[in-house]
Length: 208
Image 1 (cartoon, rainbow, N blue to C red):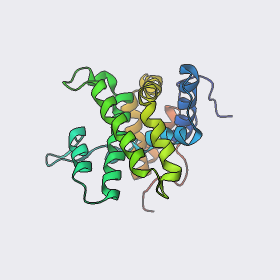
Image 2 (image 1 turned 45 degrees about the vertical axis):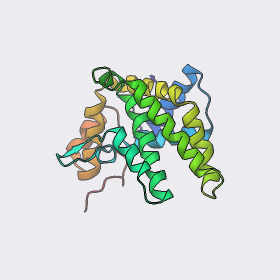
Image 3 (image 1 turned 90 degrees about the vertical axis):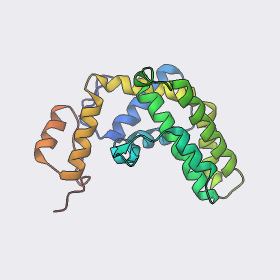
Image 4 (image 1 turned 45 degrees about the horizontal axis):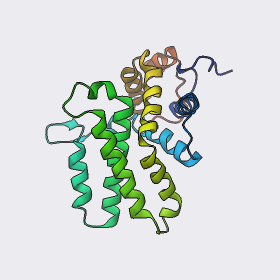
C-alpha cells in the first residue's frame, strides 16, 4: 500500500509518480484539458528540473539562472534550425517552470510573471511553427502548440503543484533527492523516507 491518501503529500512514491498524480489532480480541480502527450511533457519538465544543473547555467560568476532575453538571443542568432529549436524549447521550459513554481519570488523582482508568460508562450508558439511540416514535428508540433495556447492555465497547474509541496520545503526536499542520486548515501535515503519519499533502487549515480 503506497499511502497516497492526502493530496499534496509525497508518500512512498518516486518524484515522477508524485508529479503525475499532482499534475492530474491540479488539472482536474482547475478543469484544464490537455492531450496526454502534453500532460506527459509537463510531468517530464518537472522531473527534469529537479536537478539543479538542468535549470542553472554557468554565467561566468558561477551557476545562475540565465535571463530569458539571453536565451531568446541564442534562438535569434542560431546557426541552424536545430540550435534555434533547442533555444526556443529551453526558453519555453524555463519560463513555464519559473512562472509556475516560483511566481511568488517573481513578484519581488523587476520582471514579473506576465513577462515569463509572454516569453514562454511565444517561444513554444515559434517552436510549433518551426517544426510544423517536418518529420520530427508530426509528434511534437501539437504538444508545443498546446503549450503555447494554454500557457497561462499550465502555469496555474504548476503553481498548484508547487503549493502542494511547499509545506515540506520543496527546495530542501528536492535537493536532498538530488544529493542522494549522486551519492547513494544511506543517511540521505533515511531522511527522504522520513519525508515520505522512497528512493528507487538503481536510480542513484554513485559508482560502486
